[in-house]
Length: 420
Image (tube, rainbow, N blue to C red; front, side, top):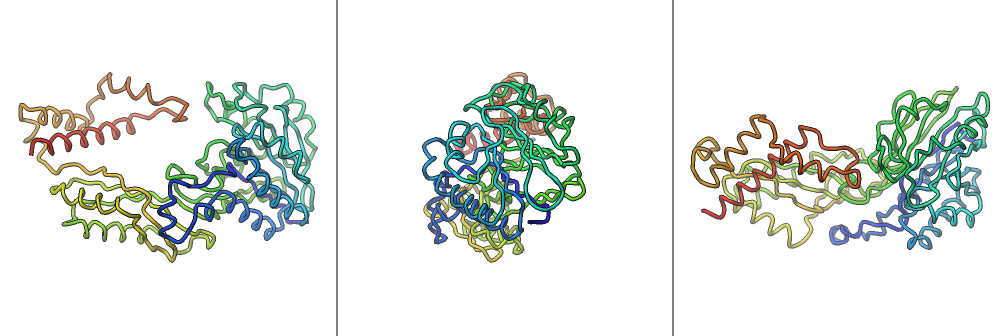
């Protein structure tokens, strides 16, 4: 059956829900369960059935944690049953979150094929009509794995089992180009040399651009879990035609986390600033978004120089009393958080001439803005926080300078408010 289409799914994290947004969701008439990964998983199953897909392939971290395994079992089993009853095969690999859980669940779910169990590579042919397609997969054998999966002897054995004439698609949960990672570090160059037409990865929640002739990168999370995962989320439709692979993102997640920058310098009062936030959100919302999108969660950043600090403080106080609801693009939304990144509207050059703490800080800010080298102590501080544990790549020069400028502006604002 089918037309060669497969549905690839990144990190699902069944069992998790956006609990921190509960108050905002309630203001929109929703519950966290209405926009959970389980809802996105059901929509993915619907999409696979509507597309007459040959297979659905899960790239690890299907389950949030071991304590979520009972909740995840019900949602996963129901979806797999619907798919297999319609003739759609279901494959998956285990990730670091479910390296111990998913193999146990897979044994109890009829029709679910776990690839690469125990950290040994495996090849599986994809059933159904269309050109021959082989999946090449590896699963986490534990919660952590410091070795390169491609260095395992089973990789070459599995590669030799790929069928002649079949299009090989690799699926792996791993940390790309992070040599010291405890989460199965692999190198892009090594993946590119493998005899596969594409690699679809789980682990990092930000999706890569997989629109090229030979896709290689992260699928991203199925459903944005918090404001740190902004933008459209969903599975990928993968079409295989004559050995060529085309991947198309399907943004069907029920919640979208949306960053929004609003200039605060022109607002005369809190009401004017509120109006500016509403206007910016409505301008940013796309009315053509997938109809399965139920709500937008806006992370508003107020920016720009302000002459009257009381306007921003008044707005922040009012916004903190109850969620701000925004109807934009035909869908409800709410302000999840307001970040104050404004700075005082002052004559920096005049202030820098003062022999005061504020003057000294103004001189430092002017130097940062003029592109003078960052102080060695500041670079050392950035090096201490730019670790793989939370940031996969170190901050570059531009990002470090921008962060230093923001911190300096906020410090100057706080200092000037004390002396006024």
